[in-house]
Amino acid sequence: MTHKLFCFGLGYTAQNLIRHLKTQDTPWQFSGTCRHLSDSAPVNSHIFDGTAPMSDLERHLSHVTHMLISIPPQNKVGDVVLHHHRDVISKLKKLKWLGYLSTTGIYGDRAGAWIDDDTTPAPTSDKGRQRSKAEQDWLELCHSHDIPVHIFRLGSLYGPGRGHLVNLLAGKQRKIVKQGHYFSRAFILRMWREFWPRPSGPPIRAEVTIL
Image (cartoon, rainbow, N blue to C red; front, side):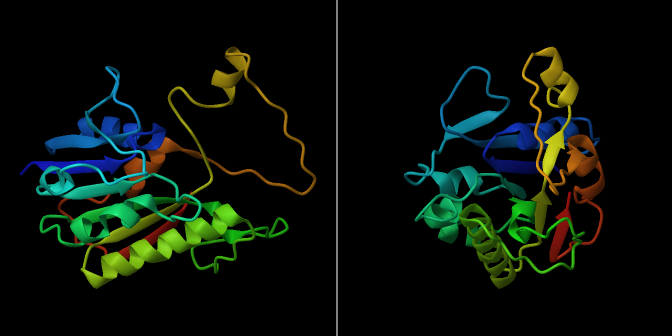
């Protein structure tokens, strides 16, 4: 059986997921959205910038089995994918898994205290509150239509083509000094190797992972 992944937003994280899945034995087909079409697009791409619905979306998604959302919410609109395409996504018959890329910013300022998967979000910034609202909206949609959903709360990711050494060699290194501020870093390929759902495994109705 061929699995079909559609990515709303073909950024760094989504492109690394596609590279990871191409190394697997299971056959995959890939497509997704970008703001502007280019010859360098890694997969079959469609224009979607969040200002208007994507054209002919129902046809493009009719056979999709997995979906990744990596577009951040926007002021006054919230999650642009839900804003324009909630009804279409809710009616997809073959969708087995939906992943949403969020941020650890939903936990707010913890004054250096540790957080874990059971920590209650308490965003202190507008962006954090928008992300938290988007999470809840996706969870509500998926629960209402029995779609397995995985929320990834991400800090800073590094991997091929991105990291401190890459920035140093490119002359783009930055020194950030903030008293009492801690940074988290996660290897992007570890993220997908460990947390991508196994096609043969049982579906998980909802899961939250902090990286």
